[in-house]
View: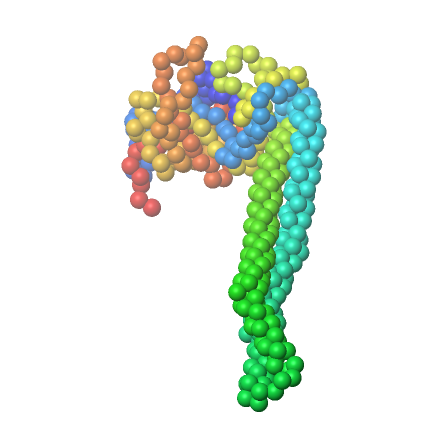
Length: 398
């Protein structure tokens, strides 16, 4: 809002003094207090009418920005209307770079995901083969060396041959026959015993070692396949996580640039009146905002006051502020409405003093008192100067 200047209240105070001079000085039964009594129980200070609800519009774009387009001060706008367009050329260049980086990060994530799926498929395909090889090696050992296996069958046959040969020799020795049966049986017996010893002492240990080696190699191959496959999956999962984080970071940066571009286009948040926000210490009446001007981040640019909800901001001298209490009645007199007194009441009292003017009334300490106006009259407008008469006397019973 426009900053109120102390000299602006002189005319208003003059209006109030004229109204006091015309007041009745006598106090009669049921009459009103005298002028002296009223002075002792009232405080008269100057103020200004302002909106009780002001929407502040800040520059949310980062860094310093140049104004390309600007709505005129005091314009009436509708929600969504363009208020200020800031230069966003550098942001649009960044947008292209961020889009490229985002697409590259997305491609990296897709590639990492494909590698992860390939690693899982490879493990699912190779591990069953390795397990089957181990099973084959174990079955081969069981077939060769297991109970009732090939070696057992061969030993039983040899044992049968030995038994037959021994019986034939016994018959030969008992009968004393001079046929070729005796030597032939002895030869068969010796051959069978030799083959039995060969199977027991050489072939069985060798076959057992060979088959155990095959089992261990199959076991080692299966474990190696599982470990390498799981390692490949973990590596691929780490790559997917890294690519996902990179995509997330790239997306966030891209979204941030988009938000900054959006912030360069400032639109009306609602219907209403638009007013420039001028620094209070600026001497010149020229607006701070203009096309081509530079604004900084978080700078207050515009204000949109609610013209239907009005209040008075009254500056009370430090010597009188202790007499002002919330809820006290206030009579507002306006130069613009000389025939009408506006009723109000104290809504709040500032705990810190108002900013001092460096060239007008230096050293004067004043506090802002907000006066609520329950029923603002027709014709009351923002910026009108007022003389506020605060009733500090004891409250009358209802």
